[in-house]
Image 1 (cartoon, one colour):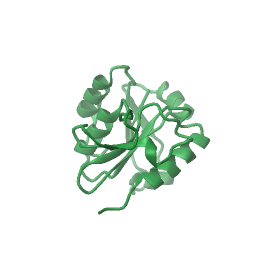
Image 2 (cartoon, one colour):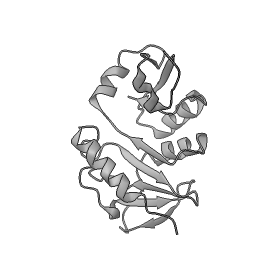
Image 3 (cartoon, one colour):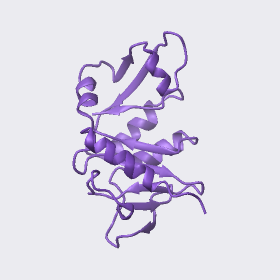
Image 4 (tube, helix red, strand yellow):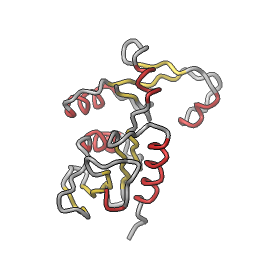
Length: 166
């Protein structure tokens, strides 16, 4: 058996909630398990009040394997997580937050790319060059999740590890 990632996801969700990045039911978190399945937040759950029972375990194709709640269903944005895990086989977790700052910044970009300033803090994104030229893709937050998935599939390059969508 493998370690349960849900306690760490809960801690992260509570922290993001307190920062205003996951207000109410906004956003979702997931973690991939060694067997390829994924624990993802259940749809419609407050991220400030998550418990172990507020997660649904799904296959990479989205079929429910395990849920504490018979009516619990995975996040409506599960397909975005699945796409990211497919594009980035080394990825072990996906955090989808809705910070006010990210939404504001996304409104001031052209061509759906955000040029990040060459700050030393980019090391936190895995960028270790001196004065790097780092671009973060930005995707529109369509109501149709499949459109977001298609945008991500078509717009991600191997160098990207994070993105914004608004």
